[in-house]
Length: 467
Image (tube, rainbow, N blue to C red):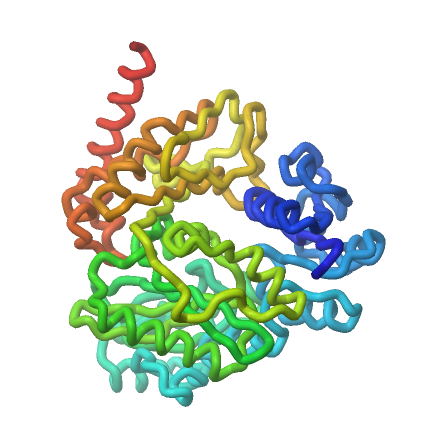
C-alpha cells in the first residue's frame, strides 16, 4: 500500500480523496493555487503545497509544477480526481516516467478512449453496439453531407477530443449541417487544441445511461450497475439516479455485460464509466468512455456500499479487486443533485461570491459532499459546483421524497444556486413517474412551468424562514 499520495485537484473531490486516505492510514498531500490557500482541502490534508496563481493553466493544469510538488513531497502516487489532468495521457506518461503511480487507468487506456471517434470505432470492432455514423474523423463538409444523407437527419456533430458539451451541434438539414460542422470544428479547436469532429445519428428522446466499472491489473473487470444521468443542462449533468427507472432486468444485464466487454477489450485498469444512449425502443448504443472517477460516483456507492475511491487506491497499489461480480449487491435507490453557484431564473448565469451563511441537510440516508463552509468565497476561476447532495431510499419514491426534504433543508445565503430547480424537479409529475430523457430540462423550462415551480419553492422557503 502507498504511504503518501498527492491529490492533483481541489474542492470536494480533493476532500473526498483525503478522507479515503485518512481511513486507509495513508498521508495526503494537497496542492493549491494562491487563491485556494484557505480552502478546506488544504486545511484537511496532512501537507499542502502551493503550485501557482489562480488561473488553472498556471496551477492545476501545470504539469511541471505538480510533478515538482510530488517530488518535493516524496509521494508514492498521484490521484487526479476528475477534471483538470484526470484524462491527460501525457500527464500519466510523465508520472510513469518519474516512477510515480497514477491512480487511474494507463496512458494507453486514456489515449484509446480519449479520441471519441477512435473509441467509437474500437468499440464497434469489439462487438459493442454503436450509433450509426462515421467510422473515423470527418475532414470535409462534403464528407459530412454524404454521411448525414446515409444515416438520415437529424445527426450529431461531435468533437473527437474533450467533452463537457463543447464542440457539439445537432443538424436537421444540409444547411444546419454545414453551419454546425464549421462551428463545432472551431469550438473544438479553441477548447481542445484540435478541431477534429465526427458524425453520428442523433437519437431524439433518448436517455443517457452509464455503467460504472472497476478493473484491476489481473484481468478482473466488474460492473457496479447503472446511473441514469439524462437530466442535463447544455450536456452538463445535474441529476443522477440509480437504478435507471425504465431499464428492464434483461436490458440491465446486457448493458452491464457490454460495459465489461468494452473494458476487457482495451485492457482497462482502475475506475471508469461506459456511457450509453438508450432510445425510445429500448435499444442502447455506446457513446463514450470516461477514463476516471466521476462526479456522480457517490450514487453507485450508496446502492452498492462499495467505496470506489479506496478501491481505486488499492488497485493502483497492485491489489486485486476486493469483490467479484457475484458479490456486488444492489440495495435501494439513490439520487444525486448538483448544487451549483448558478442562477436558474436567469439562464444559469454564474453566481460567484461569498457564502455568508450555510446549512447543509442531514438525517437518515442523506450524504453531502462539499468543500464549502460559512464565509467561503465561490471563485470565478473554477467549476461552479458548491455541493453534491446524495440520498438513498428503500425505493425510488422514498428517495425522491428524501431529496425533496433535503433540498428544502439546504440553506445557502449569498450566491444564487440550483436548489430551487432541484426542488421543482422533485415535485414534477413526469419525473416522479420516471418519464424523462435528455430533452427533459429544456422542455421543463421552455413551457414556463419550471420557472413557476421554482418560484413557488422560493416563496414557500421565504415564508418558512419568516416563521
